Image 1 (cartoon, one colour):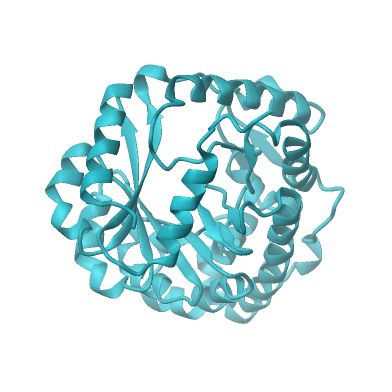
Image 2: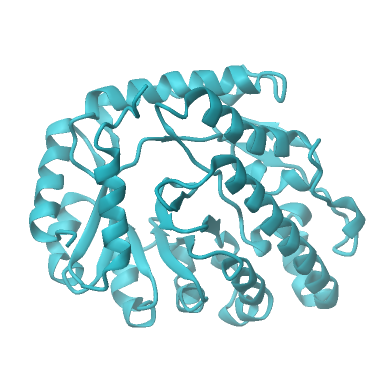
Length: 355
């Protein structure tokens, strides 16, 4: 069976051309959702994990088929992919510990009472989350790989991981036990790199590149998405001391990297953007914060080493068109109707063509 998106080679070919060119004024446009064709997704609470993992992934496949059917003629740059997703807990619970599920996310219960308890964490192939993620990618590739490209789940950065392992005691650890935090970060960094390599091995490469956790294609053996959510609660000095060295080690273990960040973490964005091998940086919109495009406009002179991924609406694309013509960008768009999605694709293709 052919991939559900019959122009897949053209879509990835455009991504390849985008990454090979340094010319400004180019944008990839990704229609991330269409409200008029919203499809209910499987609820995590309707399954017992890990026993129901394959049944859950089968239901995710059926939901994705329904998502894609009305948009097959849409000329955007969204890649048709499928990957395991069990909520946020999977980014740290692969190291051990208990997980609780809600309908659309999960939580990892605090595992460590002290940052020095390194013996509590390991990369165990029998760990439930490890099997659900790495085994889930392999299952999708074998069973549904002809219809959807298998993607990795992605990873959290070391700071985010130890925040989940230690809970909010993590913030006290930075001040009270910095040497123990360093040892824990060093250990987590090693395990994160190995965990992601196993995800990537299960998914395989696609046309010479990697399909990251947010469905972004990057050349070579690349890592993504990574997250630096903890930076919304840290100073630049704290990130430079405890975060950047370890995140940089992960990025440098791969050809390219994609980072997920938040508008609320604006102060740390320049430090993140300067990490070697970091190619794509998503800036998420946050409540009670300026829009991502405004944050980018203020900080862009210090973000020149990365291509921004910007979640924009139609008015923002038009209002900031001159800025977008000065840079390369990936635009994430949520449409209300299929007609609106077609219109914005045509506008971006005309004004910001990939050459």
